[in-house]
Length: 339
Length: 201
Image 1 (cartoon, chains in turn red, yellow):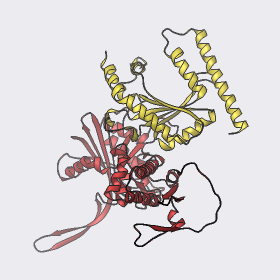
Image 2 (image 1 turned 45 degrees about the vertical axis):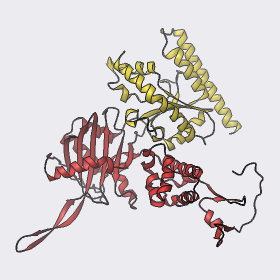
Image 3 (image 1 turned 90 degrees about the vertical axis):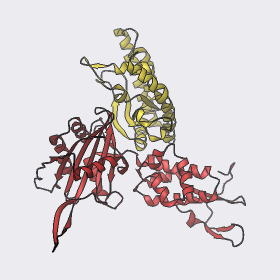
Image 4 (image 1 turned 90 degrees about the horizontal axis):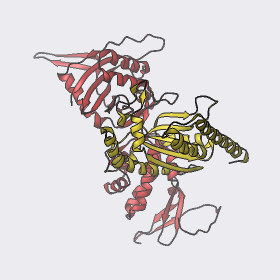
């Protein structure tokens, strides 16, 4: 899996009313410790970049995207000038909040596929300590670039066709879900001119339907209860990035996770990330109901079921409980079936 | 037989036909709450039509140098609505569930002409349509979504057989007759839409 070209650019933030510094850039050698580090970034990109993204069409709905055009141009003929255009594009959307960054472009070919990994290492400061035989020297150093846990960003694109492919890719943005949405959005939305490939509505609907289907399919009451609890907790993830898998692993037992996974058409659906939409979730899981062995069916909006009905377990009664609620009657109906 | 034809025939049988069935069911499910949708159908692009499209030229040069990857409507879905005003509403709903790379309203070049019309999208194939039997890397990435009224659909279907790929070239009179039917379909759409809006939804 050869890397064919490596380029790096120092990208200063753009400040209002100031001419941004010119970007030089350099081609990097394909040997040495730096190459080994970048090689690792390149090789691990398939697992590390876990957010599916897609380039947006232009404002008129045409199949055109200026960032994609720059990527395709760079991949067609990787070189410093074409890479610099990407660095300038990143600079144009980088503000003081995001700070100085080091941009790396790594182009390669894997079988028939062209591959491009774009990564941004944020600047940091640190202390260099050197111990000689007689003394320790300690020095403050600025402009250290680290693949830090909290603000590293990268994107991966791989496709066989330069002309018609490269409309989707994968990204990693360690700032997402850390309460820094506005800051981190500049990478995916402003620089990459992209959005999440799976829409919020589609991903949330997938989750809601899977929970309902798993509850219907399983005969295990404990698993049903876990999945119901998940449905109650899910709205706490409002506007957060998640996948069915990440939410399930946070709240469910292995057996309940399996029950949910069984409702996925394939493993990609289980791990694909999306932004949770509370509104879409409520469209598909609006009510929670509880069927009792005395024929009673208790039903309430899923978000307030536990507030509407009090459940008091009865001691030594083989799992029986007393349910109570206090309210005014507003309607009474007769039905043909219980659901 | 050309290599491309053989490759597409294999893709048609093994990949596109099963994907079209699943895509149809999936789009129907996603838009199940949307009112005034007459029908949602999906198809894999017919082999002859694909080969003909792949052979297209622009200014004497082949339009596609990699048709299997470049032709984006190998899978197509058509949503048929009652009225013109439904098209925007259905489009908005489709865009909440599917990600597009292209959106266009196809209208005749001139206001004096009557021809094919419709709202077309190029959208990413959703992951839901894949099972273990098909490797996503061997399938197209996109499908074409068309949203049309009943009249636009009826005209497009009839015209495709009669006027789009005729065994011999159409006469001037025949082309005028086809344009006349397009105008009639356009007019019927306008009247039904006005009635729908004035009588009430």
